[in-house]
Image (cartoon, rainbow, N blue to C red; front, side, top):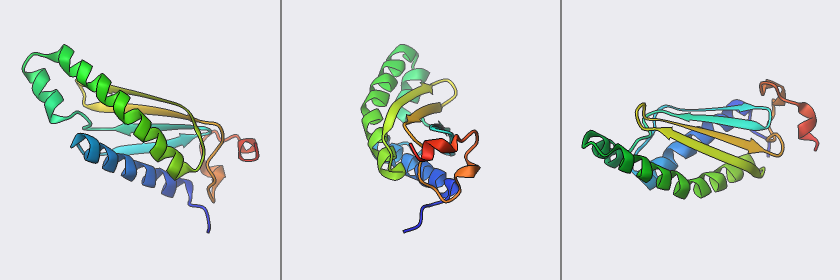
Length: 134
């Protein structure tokens, strides 16, 4: 089986994360952008705040909405890591998420031990191609 291109891999990750958020939180973020930079993966989700969080904020309960988001991020983090390891085929060393309730955006930074296996590794910005053979 041939490996995907880096663009195909990024699109698959974006689609799978969008589906995960919809399945688990009832909110389909859109757009979801995903880009590799050497052994780091950066993911940006727009419109990722749930209706419950927006309702809490509009009702003047920003602090409670922040708490809810912290718990949601903690719960979904394990699922995100499993999803990414399955799609990428490499272990995740670290995964950090942060959601800004005011803008409705979520940022995810993923650190991998080595580059994913793709047909065009030279297309990964700042790729250190020796990471492919480590």
